Image (cartoon, rainbow over all chains, first blue to last red; front, top):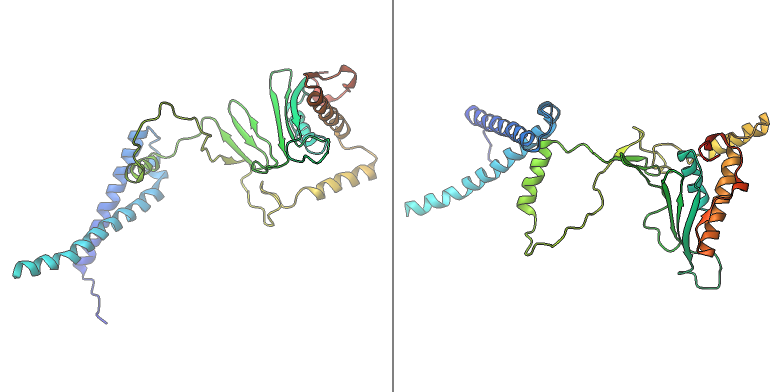
Length: 81
Length: 212
């Protein structure tokens, strides 16, 4: 079996993307509060929803990234021919 | 009426702290057409002096709604059998949930090909709150979070009355009014008229101060 190596650089990148997703989820929470005129305390009372949304966004992005990585070699091969 | 409605009437009178002043209704035999004389489909309206109405409906051939009561008020609704209450002005869902819900609807909902001229006002989707915090009966005997169906408490109260010689509080009076009101309901259905609660059947009862 092939060893899967997660380099420090890759780990940092993934954590950075996750942080971006977390900030995005917080942004959506703020947007929701403003749009639906709900209480500002939801910034901390809805932490579980924000956390869940963080991972949902992360996995959606991951899906498209994997799709991109899967499709990219096909175009590269095509270019060399 | 005497087997089932009497219980609802007792609960309603206990909650209202008064008895209805009149009743009207309709009853028919629409399912068991084998010669029996007891109505198998009844609809009755009992009216209290303050305008509150107790609507009683019973169909022997349909169990969709089960055997339950709904107390409808201007602040909310109580469902004692489910152990729940539903506020009229329910707290809105958190903003983030509403936002996700809207995004979800925008992505997955079907698009209407024509607009309706009116939109039906369907029943509230309010899921309500439990009256008691603990709402899980272990043996499935109760939906309101108590173990057992109350039989033990009934036997206990009965034994207590036998031993002490004291009758259970207001039990006879409540039974009296439930029975009279049930029979009055039958009379209203049979005669197809509005029946007023007869003065001669009113008895002293501390709970029903408003009508006595």
